[in-house]
Length: 453
Ligand SMILES: *Cc1c(COP(=O)(O)O)cnc(C)c1O
Image (cartoon, rainbow, N blue to C red; front, top):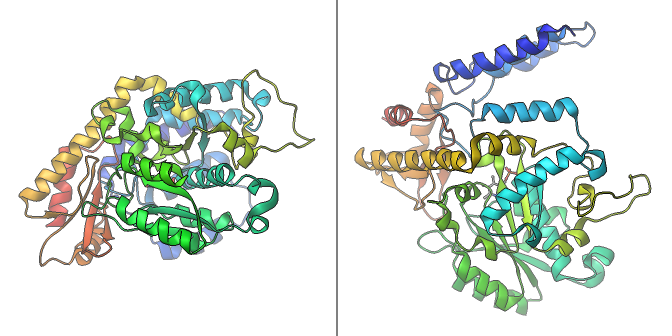
């Protein structure tokens, strides 16, 4: 590999970011031909020099993706990435810290710990009040919550398993909650039927009265309720469940309360938006993805838990081939999460926090929230009907007599903006636009309105 390779990478990164606004959001290369072309070009018999690969593969990525970092990507919580976070990713790859045990990577572990401590304070928990960890994303964080809740609610579960204990553990969440809990329930051996969807009220928040009814019914039917999920920023609608009433139900019924703030957690960074998540500190655990609203690349989730004992019972393990534990009150991460070998997921979050400062992050989040308000106002002016109610920058909308799916298909064929649709259960199919890029401006919103026609 020649020396010019790093400069070439830097040049590609700069060019891509500088020219992105002029490019289409949707892929321009022919996806049908792609696999055939790759098979021809890369037979892995002829070596390809790194410099050439950098150019070829970069070219494919520039033309063969939905560009989620584009300012006119009004999409699914996939953010534009801060340059400093790309540097964080590069450093993590370059030094390749092994995070499984603290003694192998004290610097990388402590940098992550520093970032997590600052973010945990925004939830409202002191450093010694909880245990926090970076994860691969909301899926892993939610699965961790489910596993910790099992350990907490059913002593003996970790040793003997559910079958020996004769249990039918059951999870409760809103009909608009994220389906990662279904996968988590399957992986834990509970099955899809263990996940019970509670009806939502007129504002699409989990209805506590309906929940009470289901709990009574399910207990009588021999189920064992153990986990209640409050969704703080639903994936489709951005609606925030009222956590206070859910805490009361959880206390009455001995349930673990998990706050799924995968995207909405970003609002904690803004003093103006934080009150919308008031009560999050009363949860037993929290999911918050840095890769959703913190302008950090995938795959960067976070899991915060107020019950270190439950985390230990869920994940702690001893293995003779692992280095002995070192570090005063440090945690060996392979015993505190489902992962074993673990990359330095959180280095990029540390870099972003350090570069922007908490005030800078607040401005980034608030800028996007303001643009969301602007989008709402402009849609109403143009005769669209809003279909969701949230202070967060995701807008669901439709227009009487217009087929949302046909409008979407036309826009995606054109390729200049990206948005999605959502079939609201019991409601119409609506269009859904989310401000996910800190580069998006009012002009980009106008481009979206123009595309909507
Ligand atoms: C995105 C999302 C998840 C899943 O997170 P991933 O990072 O995609 O694994 C979970 N819950 C909510 C509310 C989400 O929006």
